[in-house]
Amino acid sequence: MEQKQLDKFKLWFDDYVAGFYGDDEIINANLKLKEKHSRRTCKEMLYLAGELGLDENQKRLSETIALFHDIGRFEQFVKYNTYSDVRSVDHCRLGLEVLRQAKVLDGLDRQEKQLIEKAIEFHGRKELPEDLDGRFLLLSKLIRDADKIDALYVVTEYYKQYRDNPQEFRLNLELPDGPVYSAEVVEGLLCGQRVDYSRLRTLNDLKLCLLGWVYDVNFTPTLKRIKQRKYLEKLLGFLPGTEDIERVKEKIFGYVDFRIERNGR
Ligand SMILES: [Fe+2]
Image 1 (cartoon, rainbow, N blue to C red):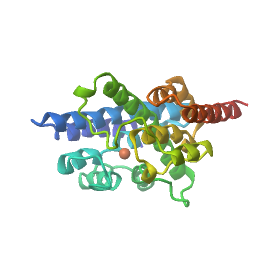
Image 2: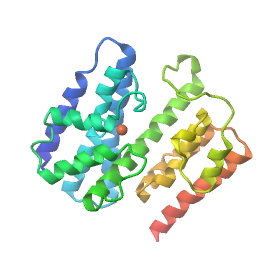
Image 3: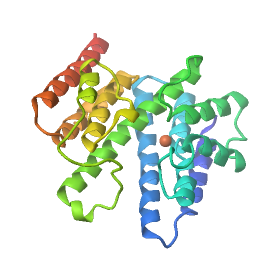
Image 4: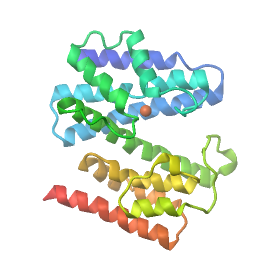
């Protein structure tokens, strides 16, 4: 794809998203979150693409995927008032419908269009399909990593706002807050396993689950970024200082350092 096609996509994105804002402040605030997330994810994607030495064309494809990966979020929120896919629709598939209806990607060659669509479709799945390979696999892995980097930024900011000013906090935390966490969530992390979302009972479980994302990271530069921004330390700062949590910290930090070091050799 050419640079001018990417430039056109950016203009289309601005225009499309601007069309959703209206009089409702809560809706506007929620839309803004995803708009900013999409823009920041583009930057993380370009960082990763650079670190991995992708060529200019692959960088443009990567940026397009990042720009559009959550394009379904805007219609989802305006229609259903939630970002929960379980309670509404699969936002990845909705995103594909949005792009197809507006014929946004129609000027691209067939394989590049497919690459973008597949990466968007699979970005929210628990696992990537096993039969993906080559550029399909690379770009699908990349968006999952870039998305995680920015999601960690978003949640650590939320938790800070919530801790500092709980009365003013307007976003839905989805899970009950309290000092409790589940033993099985801790055990899973200590065994090097990701936490299944269905196992989450409390807000602390969710924070632990976010720490466990490191096990699902595809590329070492992603771990470097997470480390450099201290997202794991920040998450741990919102958890109780028990022995269990200390063990989880050691395990997770050890894992991250091991992968970074292994890659450096
Ligand atoms: Fe998404």
